[in-house]
Every structure is written in structure tokens, then in C-alpha cells.
Image (cartoon, rainbow, N blue to C red; front, side):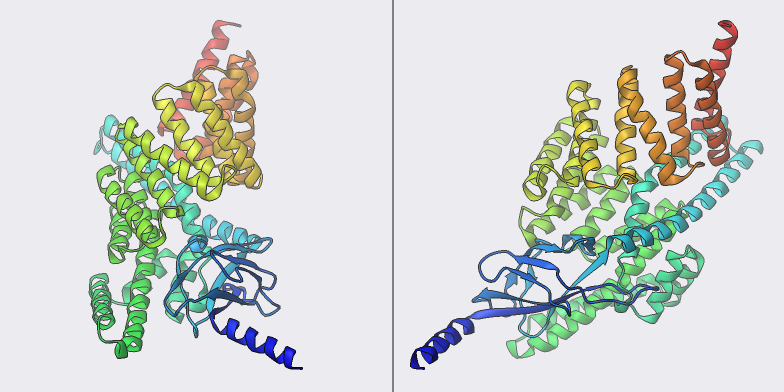
Length: 521
């Protein structure tokens, strides 16, 4: 008996030196789904201690760390459950604060639910974008007919409109995911109505509800005052720590609420093709919280892709890199993303040497973080291949595009637009190099995937048909070439209008085939 008691005493002393971080994992609340606790989620923490656990039937877990004190940092290196993914993808690797009293809440979503919600949200957004596109096209046509625009001005504006449409796919996917992983249990009744309106495509109602909260300038000032008050409270004596923490939480809530509304206004402006308004909202959001690397990256990406303001975009990308390194160390996903985007901005500026340096640095970091067989590496391969094409280093570019496609095929489902785009990139570039036999399978596959992803009447499908027409023509099959070009012209005319440069190019291809057939009966 004494031996047993001695053993128990020793165990008690040892356990008392360990810190116990409690937590739970649950799904998010959505308009049509209540949150559920998730069992059998595998979690692993970095460092010493009981660093691998599994959630119980109620979704709860406990992590043991040696010698941690409240406020000390720890990080999770693994959060996995089959057929589920994290709502906040960057949670892994981020430094978290240990607490004896506040449980760590982790939010996940089933891949099936996420895919369904994203598809529904994206479909509504596409309807709004197409409606805005049609309105702008009609307005440009009217201006041309009324001689308010010259042919040259009209073509320039049409090209600008087309470029905006072509850039929307990635942005729409990001926006759709952002709303699809929104946890409605954390929203007020008012904010729930705003999110529901945006997700259902009712942009006017969402905008009016946001305006009803008060002017953005006043709310921005209020949020900043709250932030300043919180900072002052934090600097007070230890005995005021709890009060300061409450004020900080209030400021964070106000800041996040404003940030969410700015993003919602950004979404509305994007879907209405109001690029200047969109840029204002997304940069206000970034300036509101300069310590949020995600906000900086998103602002920079919009300025780079949609505004062609590369120098200003670089300011946000460099800030994102600095903030991410300060908060989470140099080996962190947002650091790699910032490096990649810095390279992209320099590429657009024509500084390929600098761009290549950052692109290669991003690739090395992504390989270290995610491994060679990962989607981030596929993105790096695509970026590096684009740089090589600019430098006419075709023998190096093509294998990288092939590697990117291989990774997307391994890591994405067959219907994923990433695979379609990878096939289209590879096929189009091989076609431009006159490697017709090599290009053919990729162009044919991209056509099938684009149809599956976007439907029969999308301009991606029209462009893919034009590529198929070119393949048929060089292969001597004039009947097929004419058929593909006719279908391309029909789709592009219906979607983009007959004066659109893409439509006119397909029409020119069709006219050439018809003329060729007359001259070579």
C-alpha cells in the first residue's frame, strides 16, 4: 500500500508542472445547418508534451505542455478529420495563446457542404456579374452607335471589360469560400441578414443594411478609437489586465465587424465592376488592421490584378511578409504567399530578374512547409513557368507546367477549375509553339472540363472551341474546323456580343476557313 501511495504522490507532483489547454472542435452554423461537435479529429501540437490527441464523442480535447504559463504561445502542426477541412486554413502553424480558463475553439466544415455552399454562392455572384457585364456592354454599344466613342476607344474599353471578366474566376472562388465558411453563430441578427443577402445575390439589400449601420467613416473612427483605448488599457498596471482584455475584445469585435462589412462592400463593388470602389474598400480594410497579413495580401492582389497598380500592391505585399514573419516566424504559409505575390508584381512591371528571385524563394519555402507534392508547389510551378515563357526559356517552362498539372490532378477532384486552367495553359502554350500533336490532348481536355465547370455558354468554352478549331484546321479537317469555329462564334456572340475582340477573333478564324475552302475546293 505504501508503495502505491508513493507512486500516486510522485505522479501528482509531475502532473502539477504541466499546463492543460482544453478545447473543442465543431462545425460552423449555416442558414440551413446547425453546428455539430466533431469526434475523432486528430490534433498535434509542436514541441514537447502530450502533443497528439483525438477529440472525444463531444468534440473535446486536452493538450498537455510542460511549464507553460497563461499568455505563453503554442502552435498546432496537425488538425485532421477525413472528409473535413479547416475553416481557417492558416490556423496550423500560427502561434496561439495558452489559457487555463478559455477553451480553444476550432472550426471545421465538411468538404461536401463547403463545395455545395461555394457552388451556390458563386452561381449567384456569376448571375450578378453577367447582368452587370451585359449592362456595360449595352451601354458601350449605345455610346458607339451615338458616336460618343470612337472605334479605337470602344475596342479599348471592350478589352478592359474582357480582362476584368477573365480575372474574376479566382477572385469569385475566394469570395465564395469566405462566405461559405462564415460561422453564423458568431454573427448578430443584423449581420446574418447581410450575409444571407450577399450569398443569395441580393446586393442592393445588403448594401442598404450596411449603410443603415452608419457611415463607414464614422464607424472607422469609432473602431480606431476603440483600438487606441484598448492599447492604453493594456499598458496599465497588472491589476487592470482583465479590464484591458475586455476592452481589447470589444475593439477587436468592432474592428472585425467593420472589416467584414468592408469586405462585403468590396464584394458588391466587384460584382458591379466598380473597380475604384472595390479598391477603396479592400485597402481600407487592410489599413484598418495592418497586423493582419491576410488583409494585406488581398488588398495587394486586387490592386495588382484589377488596377495594375503594381507599386502600391508591392507596399501591401511587403507589409504582409513583414507581419507574417513577425507573428509566426519565417517558415509560414503567408510568408511564402507574400514572396510569390512580390514576384508576380515585379513580373508585371517587366523586372523579370527580380521576379525570378522572389518566385524561387517562394518555391523553396513552400516546398519546406508543404512538401513537393502540394497545391502551393503547383502554383509556384505555374508562376515560374510564366516567367520562363517571358524569357523564351520554353524547354524549362513546359516541364514546370506539366508538373503543375500533375499535382492538381493528384490533389484536386477531376471537376476542379484548377485542372481545367492548367490544361488550358499547357495546351495553349504548346499550340503557340506549333507543337500541335502535344497540344491536342490538353486542349480537348480543357474544353470538356470547362464545359463541366461553367456550362455550355461560358466564354471559357467559346475560347476552348476556338483552340479546337485551330487544331482541326492544322490537321486538315476543315469540316470540324468550321464546326468548332461556328460554335465558338455563337457562344461568344451570345455571351460577349459580336463586337467583342474575342468574338471577332473567332469570326476571323471562321472567315479564314470558309475562304480557304473556296480557294481549295
